[in-house]
Amino acid sequence: MADTIDRTALQQFLLRMGDNTLILGHRVSEWCGHAPVLEEDIALANTALDLIGQTQLWLDYAAEVEGAGRSADDLAFLRDVWDFRNVLLVELPNGDFGQTLMRQFLYDAWASIMLGRLQKSADERVREIAEKAAKENAYHVERSADTVVGLGDGTEESHRRMQAALDYLYPYVGELFESDATDAAMVEAGVAPDPAGLREDYDALVGRVMADATLRLPEKAYVHRGGRSGTMHTEHLGHLLCTMQWLQRAYPGCRW
Amino acid sequence: MYAQMVKSTGKGVKTREEMSEDERAFQDKIDADTKIEPRDWMPEEYRKTLVRQIGQHAHSEIVGQLPEGNWITRAPTLERKMILLAKVQDEAGHGLYLYAAAETLGVSRDEMTEDLLSGKMKYSSIFNYPTLTWADMGAVGWLVDGAAIMNQVPLQRTSYGPYSRAMIRICKEESFHQRQGYDIMMKMAQGSPEQKRMAQDALNRFWYPSLMMFGPSDADSVHSAQSMAWKIKINTNDELRQKFVDQTVPQAEYLGLSIPDPDLKWNAERGHYDFTEPDWQEFFDVIKGNGPCNTERLGDRTRAWEEGRWVREGLMAHANKRAARIAAE
Ligand SMILES: [Fe+2]
Ligand SMILES: [Fe+2]
Image (cartoon, rainbow over all chains, first blue to last red):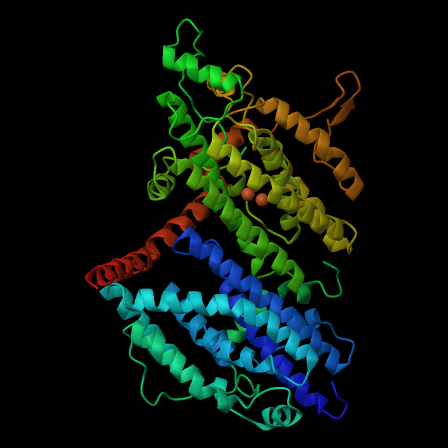
């Protein structure tokens, strides 16, 4: 990467990418052994595995750019809530299987567009990570979209549950498209697109899937924000970190 | 093992004279190491015994996700989290292969699941023990997957084709699991005093339950004799247990950990280690449902099944709607 780039902004951008996959991967991994059918247990574990793998790549790079001698593991296991930069959507609790898959689709749809753009990044490392992640994401988004459609257009009960999941989650979607100074710096350096510019493609994709699923997108949903800027997380994140970081916190400095 | 105490006919092995013509032809095939395939004729008891055995094995893979799943959200590094996720995903895959093998014998996966949840079918006693520290992830991979391999490697040669092929796929992955488990133990045993303590504690708790995995001595069991004649069981429980002890003792020494058995010692005459038998009363208690985690394990599986009903029904309804739409076009 060119030395002229604002390294703090680049590091923030990388944290946003890596924290999204870390927190979502963690949430999905909470399902282990408890899915409605065996095939779903396998698919959820696979999704979690891919997301944690992507986390490793994003946070490795973030740590490198930071240049403070921290590792990806240090970033994942030794930061507190205020330093996390994931969108609020991914830290929300799993709820039922429908809510988990709806959250997954709303994220996957965004990631499919974002990763597509990042494959044209001026930063070679970002390009490489996006290329690998996009391949995995193509499978995730196909699967989560199919499940949302299947359950939305399934029985009366499954339809009702999926509509409730969408109504609950949709106010957390807007944050994915917020732009700030960090994003402006990334656009200027050619590293990443302006998030606001992804909205049209996203709405088209999500609109198509929700129509097939016979689900109604909430109109004028409120936008909950604060995750990607770190100014306001939900209460859920702290509990997630308590679990995820416990060993590293209780037995500091060990090798595992 | 993953399939402990599988009952067969309850009678002794028939002599050739007692066999019908079909039975004789069937036994000849087995003796000649020709695989039995789903469409081939087979004695009803062979089919039933296999369903019990493969089903028990499949259920063990599924319930076996839980003690390790217990630590996925607390794995200490990103890499460890990935390795554990991949492992638990493998186990679910093993369950899938095995259910598919059992289905070729005419029982559906849903039926077997209902039998597991009602307590009619069993799973391995080992998964009713808790995983209390991170070192347990090491001990489970090292000892539990290690004991599973002991049993499953010979089963690759079992007489029933679909079962044998499932075992071949499964064994490849199990040896990975064991190595990864041992690697965790190594890190813990070489780590801080607390980590060492966790490692020793894990070995203390998992040693005897691992020995129980092979089942009680079956040298005099009529079930085992029949299963061995049918080649759906290859070694006696005692043979496998001895092999496991002989393999594991030097590994524990290498880790600098001690096996919790004061009477364990090398017997030069036998060429094997002498060791203390596990407490079989405890084993029968666990099998009957009184292990430390039976209630939780079965409760978890039951909840997953009950709470997943609307999902299964929803996806089924959608598939039917689609099929109807396509048919109407
Ligand atoms: Fe397995
Ligand atoms: Fe395994």
